[in-house]
Image (tube, rainbow, N blue to C red; front, side, top):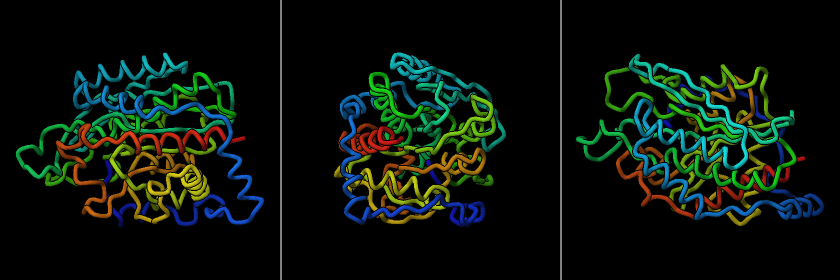
Length: 335
């Protein structure tokens, strides 16, 4: 997704909500030794080929636009796949109103591992694709839906591959995976219609107001969005810094210790409207966003963002692996 409404977002971020600070540099001999030992904790194998195939499978259904046949078929496949990986499944279905007042069907897919555990971690992605290629260089394509290989399918695919490992090797804490729907139905560029933050991320907003379990809470949340592009750079985005600095530090430190420093950089970037914003604001789970930032483009999301070029040609096994292995390292090292 993501639009960069800096003034709007800055106004709705409550300053000083960041979690307790940790030293991202890991200085000090004893602490560094402990960190190095931590990444040797046994973890499941993360297959980049499998994550790539899961991305491609979603794309092959066609654009996963709410209300389409592709939405129905892909939701059925995602649900079946997660269930085959041993998850306890809840599909949260509702209708939500999009920017122009129309109602569209929503399917949030929730996969629970070790649901009996009260101490939990929340992993998130969106699985829908944008109904409009409003950033395409060809104006004739602006009203066509996109394949959403990177923007949508990549994050869901990484979480599917993580789920495959959770089946065979339980984590110390309980894990919830939520694939949010209707994330990318915000106001298209060029429309004579107000563009408001709340027009985006409708699935996560709905879930945050109506969690699958009354009183649900998690220790923290990690959102994966646009995690498949070749040579992607994941930066320390401002909403993540403001609400969950300690989580951000933990994840970035793990990525760098695993050798993925070219992906997980310490560059600080502006706030984004993404699912984690509403999870932080509405339900209060401190959450971060692992999301591509491209300094060479005006959008900061890559030249293919919200265009017809967001297809499998822009998906890298190496990037999927960097995101997936980093998250795995973090969740298996929790106590």
